[in-house]
Structure formats: structure tokens, C-alpha cells
Figure 1 (cartoon, rainbow, N blue to C red):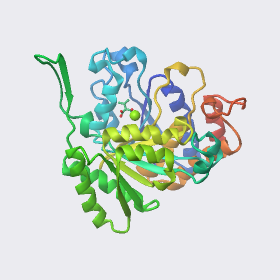
Figure 2: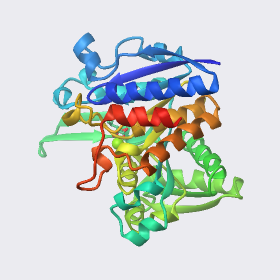
Figure 3: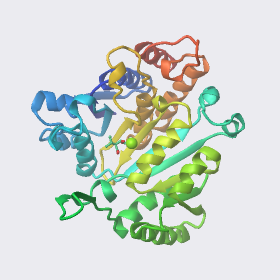
Figure 4: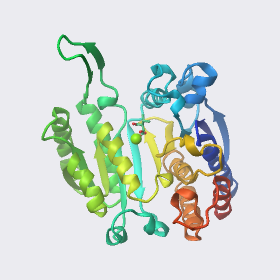
Length: 358
Ligand code: IPM
Ligand code: MG
């Protein structure tokens, strides 16, 4: 088969980590008999510099002409929150999620066996293992609600961001979570703030309806503050964690940290129709950009998710994951995952080793 992949290399370390990932994808193609066609898509701060806006016209259409989208990272201090919205990279990220209707964001956080010592939690907690999947709602809630900023008479300027959720939006992300749980350890923890928020009470009632339907899956409600605490106290209790957009943003960063390196974690964002979008969880790390220091593993593992979910090629996905695990087991480390004093390698060398392991 021939697959067409949109590449959004983006800013900072984005181009370096995507370049290594492309080499790994091509190696998989050679081994398993697939060919790939790459379409470069300009988006993010680099697009602002080249074309005046971070999300140039036609970006979504170009992505829709492909089977999947692979994104490196976008963002950087030179396109900060003082800049107009159309110049900010984050605007592009939200726009592409909305335009491609990528409502389900899957963020697996697993402690890889070779890296138990990188886990910042107590040794005995780490040894119990961490293998959870955050299913974050990605196109609704406070990220996309009406915003306002206005002058009041006696309290200075006031600003508002509206959090809205419909039953339709909650049900479709809930179904995703239950379906994913069926492929894993069959447990769903639904995270909300139902003791305060009306959106959360609606969220909870829809989830309860689904829990009755998916009676083979164990279900629990967890308040978001408690979830933040449980993630550092006993993360092994979680299998699938499903939650709304902003809670998911915050909890997925926490979940990534407890696995030792944000440089290792992939993600997938999908809707009901192709293409889905795959990207590392980490950002563009402008401080180390262009220095061959970035860890390409999160992007390479994102490509594994692409094979699994967009191309329905699980053996190819397994081959990539095994190649990464072998590189780590053999002791190869980029600086972000090294112990003090340990020998480290750069982005390109790590990419090369993983290609050889395929
Ligand atoms: C993420 C990021 C984005 C988000 C930002 C960059 C807009 O933090 O993908 O988690 O908040 O969704
Ligand atoms: Mg985030």
C-alpha cells in the first residue's frame, strides 16, 4: 500500500524530530512493503514568519488530502501571547483540531521497563508499574467557548471564558474511552468536578448511562483534584482516564511527568473520519532547537500510533515500539532521560539506532 502523510514539522525541535521519524517510517516501509508519500504542511510560528499567519489558508484541505498527519511541535517565545491571535502557533493548533474534528485525544503514559529509575515517584510505586491512557476531549469546553473582555464600572476590566458541553460531545468521547478500555484492562475512570460545575454534572450523567451499556468495563467517577493527587500517590490504579479538554490538558502533563520523560510520550488526535493527527506530547523546546539534543522517541512512538490507528497495521506499530524499547534496554539515552554522568547521544544517533532495530 501507498500512504500519504502530511508532515507539519513546525518550530523549534520540530523539524529535527520529524526528520528522524520519517527515516524510521521509511525503514518500516522497506521491511513490510509499504511506500509513503510526504506532503509538507506549513503551520505554526514558521508559517507566521513565512506567510503572516500561523494557520495559512488551505492548511486543513491539504491535511484532508492525506491519510494521516504527523506533527512535530509548534510554538516559541517570539510568537508569544502579546502577538495577535492569527500569528500565534497555539491558534493554529486549536484550529486544526476543530477543522479536522479531532475530538478524541489519546495520550498514553506508560513507564517503560528500562526507565524505572527515571520515575520521580517512590521506588515501590514505580515498581508497581504505570500504564494508563488519558482520553482527553479536544474540541469542546472552555478552549472553544465564547470569550469576552470588557470594562466594568467599579471592578476594572473583567474577562470571561465559557465552558459548554453538549450530551453529544460527552457521549462520543465517552464511547471512545469505553472502547479503548475494552482493548486494555477494562477500567474507565471519568474525571470531573461535579461537586461544583454544571458541565461536570451533565458529563457524569452521560458517563453513567454509558457505564450501564458497557457493563463489562469497570467504571468510577473521580473528582479532578483527587485525580491529580492519585496520579502521584498510586498511578497504577488507572487504566483509561477520560476527561474534558482543560482537565485533560493539565492531567496529561502530570501523567507524562511521572513516567520519567515528557520526551517519550506520543499522542493521537482523532475524529470519526480520516485523517487523524499524531504528535509528541512535548513542546517545541526552543532552548535546544537545532543542536541535535532533542529526544525523537515521542515522535517516533507517535508514528507507531499512526500505523496502529490510521493504517490498521499493528505488526508495523509493534515493530517500532520494540525498536524503541531495544534502544532503551541497550542503554542508549538522550540527555533528557539520562542519569547524571551517563553517556548521552543526540537526536540523529538515537534515530539511527531505532532504524537499525526495525
Ligand atoms: C497540549 C498543549 C496545547 C493545549 C496548547 C499549546 C494550546 O498544551 O496539546 O496539551 O493546551 O491543548
Ligand atoms: Mg498541554
